[in-house]
Length: 132
Image (cartoon, rainbow, N blue to C red; front, top):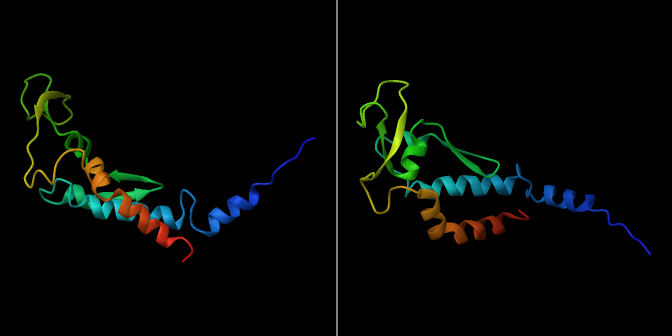
């Protein structure tokens, strides 16, 4: 005995509810994650926060120093050991943590800290969006 199952209707259902990777629910989650991370993201001039956008379940920051701030470690010039480096000069991670104004709320690993605080709330909100 053999049988087959047609799952194409499942794909249609997911798409109609906005559940695809580029769907309405994913856009909602992306926007909520960015909005909630704003409380945890280092602020300075606001350029980092303002450079964030969501795309298909990923949050992307367009400023070149985003990764450096996310991991929260001082980076130094390979030639001088100074935090200042010439344009294009390679920098390496030093074994010193950055300090952030607004800490402990703002600082490194802001996505993980936001997720621990607001993750369930974001998912509940996404659940309420299904079927609208």
